[in-house]
Length: 213
Image (tube, rainbow, N blue to C red; front, side):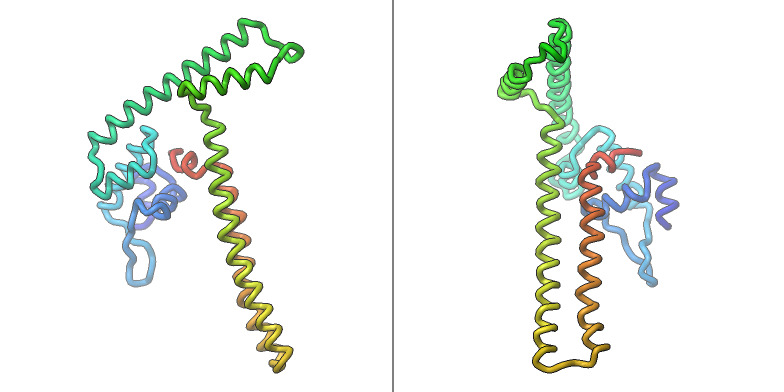
């Protein structure tokens, strides 16, 4: 069956299905003409992925489940502990905000240093502030994307430089030279387009996007 049918059967978007394929959670077969051909096993697997993601189970845990390294019971037990920790984090963060309101903290009397010190103390006690963690993960992924793209661009520029150097020693027909230079140039454009798309995905949080149904 085609991906449109899968979208209707599972209730998730084409973008999310592609995302799970990229993450190695779904291995779809190909028809003779090269198009993806989804089967009922793929539909069932996607339903399981959707179930886990709606419980906020991390992708790595889902991967281990499909690899046979985790059972459903293992994942649910771990998720109960994780969600309890999240609940405590939210409650303590909520209490912190309420205390500031009760103290009638205003812009003119807002002691940011003191507030940050209190937050750091809470972090040492186990409280996690999710936005900071998410930004750290985003920065790590952005660095990885930039490094990979940078390496590819350097390689393509090197190839172009070698071609120009070789042409200075033994000139090639202009058409052939432009053709040879055009190949790495097109690769560079493709890399830049892919990098921009990747940075947008990271900024939006691909895991957050993949959990929206």
